[in-house]
Image (tube, rainbow, N blue to C red; front, side, top):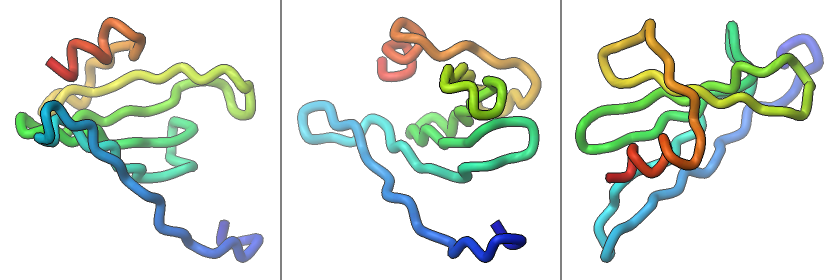
Length: 88
């Protein structure tokens, strides 16, 4: 981004609500990160889950995985079932 003078931009975050109460916030952290194609933090009352895309660069086939709070070594693949578990 620096090499090509791409301006920094703030990315919007959004909340998932259950009966008007926030359950989880999606907070983008970076489009390009070391070792991944992007990062989004999933912020919950219990802690922050770090969501990263581990796919090949520009593959068009994202492979999202997340790290649980306090465990920076073990990842879990994100799919419909694991996402629902995060919401519960």
